[in-house]
Amino acid sequence: MKYKRLTKEQFEALHQEFSTFLATQSIDKKEWDTLKAEKPEVAEQELDVFSDLIWEGVLTKANYLEHFSKSHIFLFHCQETHIQSIVLKALEPQVDLMQKEGLQWLSENMFTDTVEIHLGKKEYQGERNTAIFDLIKEGAILSDGQLYLQINGIIQS
Image 1: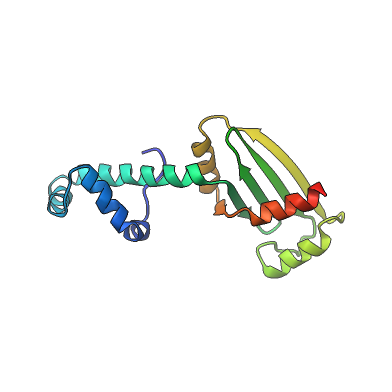
Image 2 (image 1 turned 60 degrees about the vertical axis):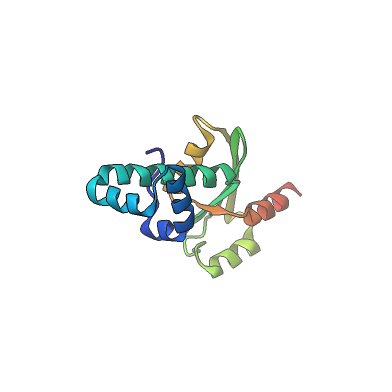
């Protein structure tokens, strides 16, 4: 398995897609039930293959990621050959960037000596999707990129 198996909830949400996937494998409902009962290892393999297909599609479309912690915000723009990052660090220990008040504080103090801003660019060491998946495993979430683009726009002007 290249990525990780989808959760039960994700499988339920993708029930129709999974049924279509099984149909492409010439597996109908009856045969699926038989596989689960008599050859659970084969059924597990089908779940893993489907999970990897879904992850591959999601990761291929991923353009932006965000990762928030109490004192840092990591913003990533996932491009074809490299990833660009903006890292914001609050130097005030009482600020919590995971709270609404912390984000308000950040917007008011962005260009003061209480906020460090680091820009970065890194070529992918291996496959693009694997690198993105590694960031997700570390806590990053997929994003529409609005925050990255907003902060990048402010920094560039």
